[in-house]
Length: 238
Image (cartoon, rainbow, N blue to C red):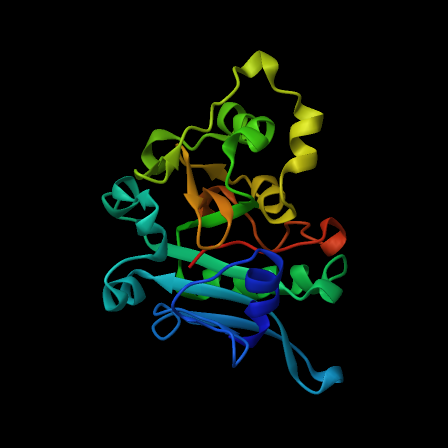
């Protein structure tokens, strides 16, 4: 998809067999079966300026798996008997970050969740770079403060898996750590989001991924104050 190329390919350096450089597209095999939220700026000729990709269990069955299952063992989610919705490929073009655009996408997501009855939202979100030691503070902060409860705690798969708890809790500088946490992950955390066990190194996208999980029974997406002041948003989710 054209709107995704700039954040994922040009900014993050993503590549792979389904990145069509000549056509300016970033896409993969999950796009055909997923639902897509598109943010369209009609004042600028109807251009797509933001996206969210949504996959429920039916879409995952059609694709053969959820996107996240290449990186995380989703056993706790699949065995929980709850209605799952995978969030992925969330992005805004740079000029739309820092305003209300992300809030509009979140409102649309809230409507989709309400309409479909999704109970557990999840998906991988990314830090730029593939050296966990460079991310020791934020990764350790997430582990010690926002680890998912056992019933939602998915686990990163080898060989790309790396530990989150690189530093012991007493060595984590909360202020410094939060400065390194991407805006999208901060937004999920404010909604009550948690992280799975371990991170996963995605060398195709040049990122270190964490799996974000949100139980809608504990969230209120409509009242969440997700405004674009944080800037945002590129994750490497499916």
